[in-house]
Length: 524
Image (cartoon, rainbow, N blue to C red; front, side, top):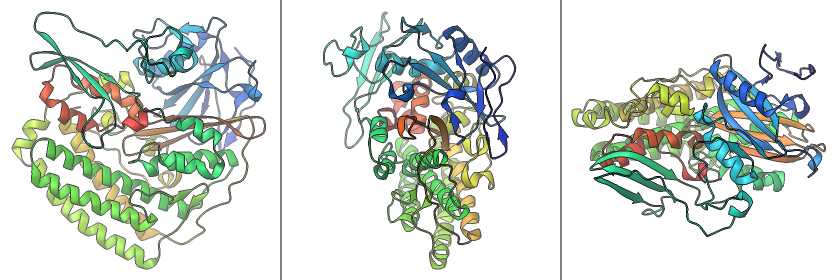
């Protein structure tokens, strides 16, 4: 065990290490010195991660830390970020990579670690010994050396196959119609029944994390807003909060309220749009057309705030770029009321239509136990009975003072996911109305200068798809030297594969739309 370190504090919260666990417990947006994170052996790392999860935490991120003082001779360290939702804390634990560049895999015990370990092996050549299936995550080759995989076009990836009489294979993508991004889906079927679905992504290598480190500060927000085009506010806010924390700055309350309003309008537009798309997939065109129009109404309200239908450039480090005038507030409240009335009438019609219920119910079920084991997040997890929401569990900005009830259903099917969309949209409307009605002018932003040296911060934001994680690391000069992004889709793509097991292959479009995951958010 390491000697006790001085425990930094933030906002009256003391960092503590619970008994029997060598984990530094921090909080959302709390900056910690890098040398305060416990460094343990691979055996202790394996034990502590598993023990923390058994006590209620989950694996929010796992990454290789940049070397100390930018020295190539410094030993590499793997950092595990554990989110303990009930007490609202974040655990940090670090393992130095052994000379043999191998450690005991967590995935056999913690399935939620499987994609993180594949990524670490693929990018850094650190092998998780005992990993059940160390297939490529974003680099599609079978070469033994991960370093050789990058840029290689040889040895195409072998897909999982089910053998037996009557088994057939259906391959979809990676090229899709229209503007859909690339992703490959391979089904192993017996007749119409799906026995296994394998999802292969990684066809886009945009280098977003490296760009965030290497770009000048003025460009970083534009990069963050481009991580997933339908989650501009979510990713932009997570990035700004990380930068602000490192600078020791907090946005003014007025700016926090405007950020919260923008985040909920982004949530509204996407939840309403998804409900409309689900109607389209079951051939209910009245719902599809009405909700498609209403999605545009909510996007237009976001444009009223930012001059962009997706909210670009509204949020900036330290606050927001512009506020709302008294006339704008009145106009937004009036338009919001009309959209709310139409949305409620349309949603009630949809959920009261028996033919829709017969298609939604018992289709694409993800049980509570599977959702827990995979570490699913956002509406997908909440539809399976997991009460998990960053706004409630790890509150940030205005959500520390204005609380939104967590929308949870138990069925885990398409109907459950649709109901969560509906409930969350209703509660977002209420939140936006209340916040706009109570706005009082104050400064729009605080100046952000510099950053704490040799420090690390974990920034969590509840985007419309779920938990967004941005982890920023600084060097001895206070310069950004490492950045890690976890989009909620990274956690949730395996859930879609489980949802299709035992389903009819014709139900794939409906199940896929009920998840509506991001290719771009995965292919950083």
